[in-house]
Figure 1 (tube, helix red, strand yellow):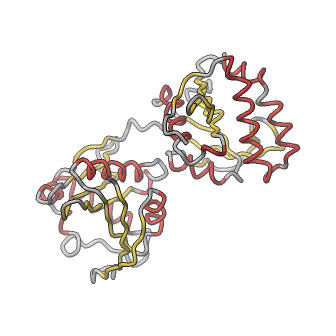
Figure 2: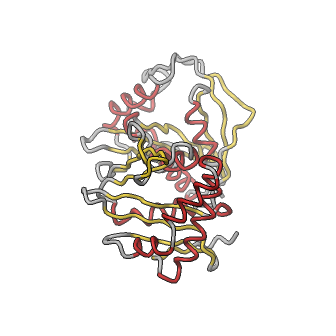
Figure 3: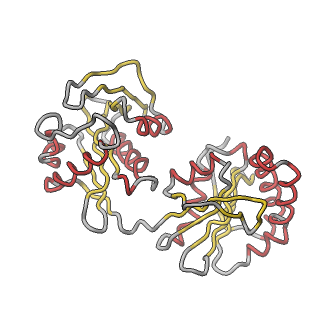
Length: 325
């Protein structure tokens, strides 16, 4: 498939093709959950050309289409909800184009005008792939379950993403040491037997900016919240020519499910590539299974090697590697 993707506002002439895309995608996604007959009924009501035309003219709405080489591959719709927020009413990608970045591009472009307000959506709880996609991009599930689009025969969970203006990315400072120690302590608490010991196995936390400055190609960033506390971090250096190493990727529990870990990993990858690295490696504790899933989703491959650190936590680490250039 061509890598050329273009996004633009939907036009009246697009509506029949948008209807066909939505019909195809709904059947591919929901036939196994609701049955083909109900899916056909819903799409006929919700995705008719007439219904789509009403969306096209809704006040404040952002109605986009995504094309590759002139072929429609995705569509999205968001609009003000009348309560100070925005509702992502629709985001669908043609089955053959899923997993190629179309959904992420549509999501970012559609919600860009609403970045300063909460954004929410409804999703079928059985659509695990969609739920995981929205969680990766900062949406969190609200408690309970309700009717989708006002239909009692369709269930939905609500997911909300809060504005991120309260978070600031910046280079690490030496005076972040205490915050970083607290951050790691909170993260390690999720795993029995993991402890923080800055005087033994975490000496770089005593003066993190000074420590990273001594390493070839070193860079270290933190994410600071509205209260000035460090809530996430990542570091990278280049221990040997062509090979960079990822360190200290942590996100405070209350800031998770906002896509921070992925964004920080991408930041480290970009830095590594910019200083000439062709691959990025990392070591991760065998107990950090959530982190392993993130790394593997981002293209890291776990190798056969492991190492025993002999530290206070009795840590054994797996080796991961990813080509970046």
